[in-house]
Length: 231
Image 1: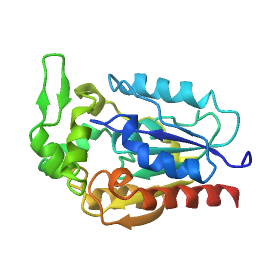
Image 2: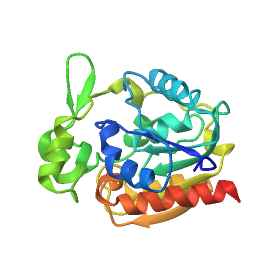
Image 3: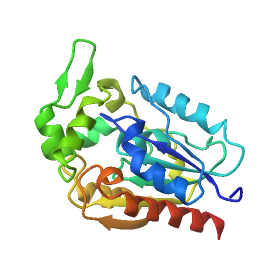
């Protein structure tokens, strides 16, 4: 159906585009065109450049969906978000101008999923298997969670120090899924992100990876965003 917007899915830290597989198949079944690119996670600038590269390839209205650190990437589009008509945040960071992920995280004790980051000699952080399976993806079948762990993409610690400029959500309508059992980003922090951006918000009993464990709910929110921008 050519009148449907395109959907661009932005993965977060310690993930890759495959984390969206169940969401992609459902969106395809509904007639959407979908792109789920790989992000280098070497710096916020590099990640935003990759997203702009993908957005510039779209020929019409686009809904951008960001998970976790992917929320930082879509927010950093600022006022220059080619073809984007709406933003969907899935258990994601939704920072305001002048904020950084690192400063927010340092404001409290480390969450269970991020308590034992393994930082290599190049300054990239990895999640240990026990924390990935037991906390990051706690409601995913352990065998599948171990596959997700195997394909995790290490994330440069530098991205946590990058300060947000003008956030895209100040200029675009937003939707937010709060994962109420999240052990990476505290659910109350997610609620605060959603409230201050004025996002249409749903809450789902999920770990940090609802696109894997609760794909129907994620797709439902994306469809709500499509309906919202079309109204």
